Length: 247
Image 1 (tube, rainbow, N blue to C red):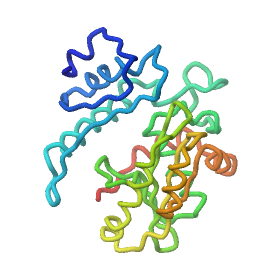
Image 2 (tube, rainbow, N blue to C red):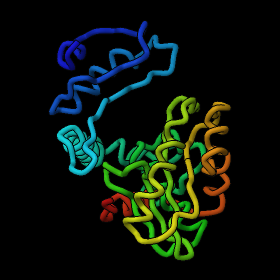
Image 3 (cartoon, rainbow, N blue to C red):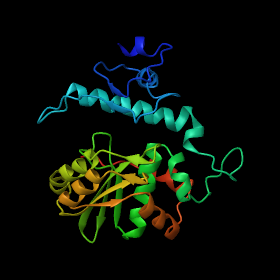
């Protein structure tokens, strides 16, 4: 089905794998098509795949289009739907409060962009980093890059609403980013991290992380960092407004 046809009043909860073979200039159309499967009545984890053709040297059409669509989505999240920019945990009041300190139980209420910013701020403080960046959309497998003791730390972030992370792709992504960021920043990558708000990780995830020497920070470990360091929504907004690292 095309994104337009699939997005019109259908309920397809018998399926749980979505492959967007045809991109649409309006990312909301793609999201609406995805929601035909990811809706009330779905009992399985929903996997969404967007095949992208890469060129070894130049930015391909697929990569350029994906970057533009991702930027549109981020703009929508930041401007058009303010309730996603300032989640409203219990006790914050109707309009929310940017100075509200984020608690572990608030992590699932964040958007994926806000979760990346949260991780950036937590590890920036925990490791006393000298520099910290969120990366651009085409990040080559790392959402956050930090300079710690003259070496590089790379973080791949995965935000989930289900509380589970079953795959191992995130581990492979941050591992493959190592040589790219080493060359770009002219420093060695000494620490690779996979950060997720998931409470449950599959054995394959942990096995792949151990083999790749990637340190895992799941809900439990991130909760410890949140108790140790004060991170407010205002801090997250400031991080999201800063210039991103382009690699």
